[in-house]
Structures are given as structure tokens and as C-alpha cells.
Length: 129
Image 1 (cartoon, helix red, strand yellow):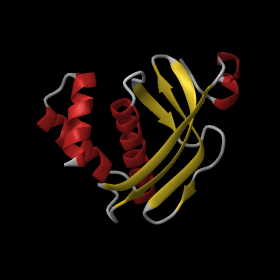
Image 2 (cartoon, rainbow, N blue to C red):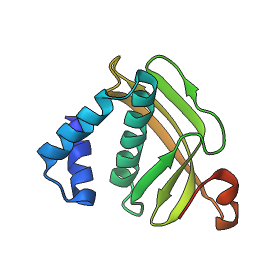
Image 3 (tube, rainbow, N blue to C red):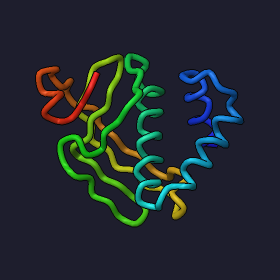
Image 4 (spheres, one colour):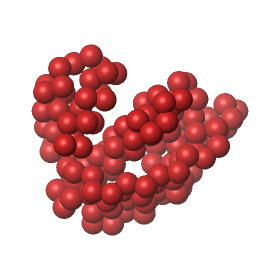
């Protein structure tokens, strides 16, 4: 069900049929090594949740390692130094995401949005418009 919600929200952004997007997303994730799949699946979920939970954001990019290296475990990622982009602005972000063993389903996600990142700092953290 969560994958369907993710596909539906991405449908609004990309304009593709939900079934096609879901199968493309799934196929793409399955091609990744397990650690990359974990990170990408959690990145997609946190973007979706931020936009769903707070309509003032339209999150379209997350960088889990913007300010510090994420803590990766077998089925989870914890990033206290992440950033996300919304409407051309970057914001600090902390999140912890737990997935199923195949890293295709998010079981638990907690996140906290921080302060907006000044444009003068973007290049220092490899963030872009």
C-alpha cells in the first residue's frame, strides 16, 4: 500500500501512469546493491512524507549526507545531517528509516525538519538550486 501511495504522489509530479511508475520504480530499486537500495528507498519515502504531512513543502530532492555521514545498519539508515529541497530552497533534515529486509518496503520513518539553509552555504555542502 505504501508503494502505491509513493507511486501516486510521484504520478502528480511526473505525469506518468501510476502502474508504470510503480513498476519502473520497483525495477530500478531492485537493480541497486542493498545499501544503495536502502538509502534510495528511504530518501523517496521521506520526500513523499514531507510533502504529504505539510502542504507548504513540495520536497523534490534529499541529500542524506549533506552535513554528516548517515549511520547505516542492515535494514535502517539514520541521518542527522541531511537536507531536502522544496520549491528551490534547501532545509536541514534529520530522519531515521527502517525497511523490510529486501529494502523495498518502509516499515518505520521518523523525521524532523530543521532550519532553512542560507543560499550562501549551498556550495559548501554541494547543494544546488
